[in-house]
Amino acid sequence: MCCESSAGVFCCRLVPRRVNSVSSLVGEGWGQKDRATKMENLWGQACANLKKSIGPNNFNHWIKPLRLNEVQTGIAQFESPTRFISDWVNRHFAEAIVTELNRHGAEVERLRFTVVPAGASAPRSAAPQSARAAAATEGRNDDRVAAPATARIAAKPELGAPLDPRSTFSNFVVGKPNELAHAAARRVAEGGPVGFNPLFLYGGVGLGKTHLMHAIAHDYQARHPESQVMYLSAEQFMYRFVQALRESTIMDFKAMFRNVHLLMVDDVQFIAGKDSTQEEFFHTFNALVDQGKQIVISADRAPAEIKGLEERIKSRLSCGLIVDLHPTTYELRLGILQSKTDAFRAQQPDLEIGDGVLEFLAHRITSNVRVLEGALQRLFAHASLLRREITLDVAQECLADILRTNDRKISIDEIQRKVAEHYNIRLADMMGPKRARNVARPRQIAMYLSKQLTSRSLPEIGRRFGGRDHTTIMHGVRKIEELVGEDHGLAEDVAMLKRLLEA
Image 1 (cartoon, helix red, strand yellow):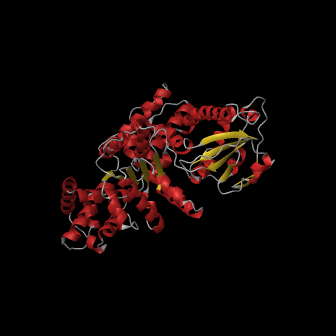
Image 2: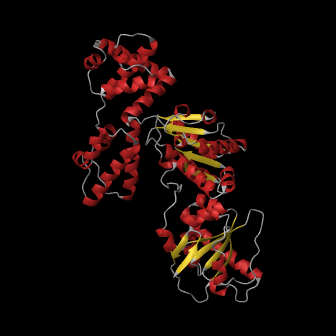
Image 3: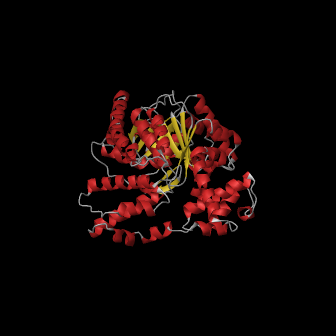
């Protein structure tokens, strides 16, 4: 059988008719009050399970605003405050809603949404519509019909913003490189007076920015279950904005983003160079700050370093607390590995890991935490499936490809080129005799990074810097080591250059 919806024609799965189901009774002599009570009870039972299955954040944001009016001829009729919410529920949660309604005695094949603005009330039908009348209204702009479960599976999926249940504060390992970011995230999650807005987290790939943002959302929602929390990537923000423009629902879009209590936007560097999206983001940002709502932003670099981002947005982002998540240290990587191992052992007590394996991984895999965790997970799977102890030899054999990738050699030429580009000096000045501060300091930074990131000896490094003596290289390295602890700006430059070279 085929049926129509706002998205086109789909093949519908027919649900077998059940005797004494809610849908078979609606309209058979029921009074208006009885029908309303039945619908409220049915929807209340379904919502209890929906909240568990899709999570409290999604439930409060998308499902809670809906109102079930009636169930008839296989169609569950809902009221929705905006068309945007109707469309989103249609695309993402229709299958779950249909399943729950059927589980609680209804006979539902699909959903229909009628847009009723907040504060208004749509009149309930005194008698059920005929199937023919229902089909005739499905193409109207304010009457959207969700495709049945079987049709939705075949449809192209929409981008969403789900929260990872594993990304909580309890699973976040704190060390010196991320302790400030963790403390600031905790403060935001408490929901009280924060003292900074926005919180801007930046750093390289796999350093924990997204984990912290998910943890904030989980904790904030647990403390304030009635609050609206919105987490999404900058790409998803742009996608929804463009969709709202295309479908002439820009007011719904504005209302949605301006009514949240906590807005979190990941990878904000994505909107750089996209003028219309930046314009809307700017106004959304200002509206929320003016209302005292909290904003959390993440990016791969500091606001001032994001090319193509409007100056007024850079200025707004810089008004809050900017926190750099530094590259992981050996101690932090080892702590993460030990935490993950303890969690796995709680599920599989017979797991055996030989001495030195975790230390070996923490020393060899330095690129980012995701690669480190992925390597450990592979070892766990290997040990579980083959029932073998994870020894150092097993780890080297099982992770040969990852270890080769992380052994990528960084050359002195590459270091000199990156530093010269960053400080806008000529590459020849790295080897030349100039002693002006604007040249000498970048040259010393390049020497320091060459000592840190390569296995070359001091005399070898000296030869690559215009034949300089090894004592000159040693002096340059020591000078930068001192300045890194004293000059915050220089320390950030060195950390960023190191991330770029190791990426």
